Length: 298
Ligand code: HMG
Ligand code: MG
Image (cartoon, rainbow, N blue to C red):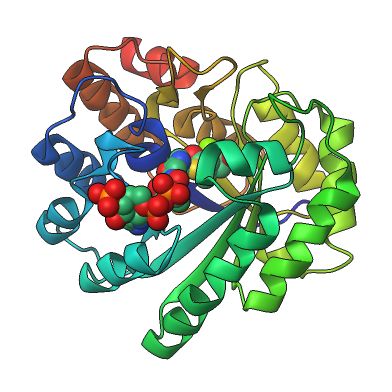
């Protein structure tokens, strides 16, 4: 009774690279994105039109979006925190804009410098502009399974933000375990609560693998009927300065598990593994995908 088709959202070029201390040249980002779309990924999060003071690594989003080879069938997404970011995202012809808030007030303050309610108010004109432009709108909810500042986060705090994002007109909403603290029972509880107020087939799971729980959490969410997940090629990500922040679950590892379960994604695992090798070498980091390393060693 698992969903037979799973949508994988590749977030490596954005979530995976945003914390790299050394600048990653735009041509490397472009090659990364083009390899990922060529591998069949239906959705690639390619940029973040945020303040370059806050996230310098994402400052070249316009250049990256202008240089990628757009594959028909791949949706290119970008994070947008406010109207300034929205204008840049529309100028860059993104296919989906992502507004992002949190289930914890402390994290919203730290990440976007405002309260949850203020963030939603800021997203209202962004959502209207997305609808007017015919661009998809996704909402992302950080710290849905725990917060580095406040600790536990109740499912009802997540449901509250899901409802606010639904009211904005979000096409899809992802529930994010920013610091990877969630375990399968908690994951099922939060998705089952969220599904009470938003269609289950438009919810997605975004799991960081800090505590090694991400694959188990994905399987638990699949068993609850969730059919869209985020992942980063080579398990990219992790900030040497922010306590608790490690990469997303590796795309290769998720694909290996889904293939073993007989679920379809339309993505070529071997091509993603080679892409993981490419980007790990390009930024001088170990490849954090277990499946990717094993496949490439064969
Ligand atoms: P602020 O300082 O309160 O905003 O930041 P402001 O409006 O006062 O602007 C400050 C400066 O930034 C001004 O420049 C603005 O023009 C500029 P100055 O006049 O000082 O030279 N600015 C911008 N520049 C470019 N693009 C923009 C933009 N907006 C303002 N869009 C703000 C508030 C939200 C802007 C800031 O806090 C910000 O950009 N935060 C982004 C943080 C971020 O990107 N975090 C990582 C992504 S979220 C994530 O990783 C979680 C996720 O993966 C899910 C999960 O795992 O949890 C999605
Ligand atoms: Mg993340």
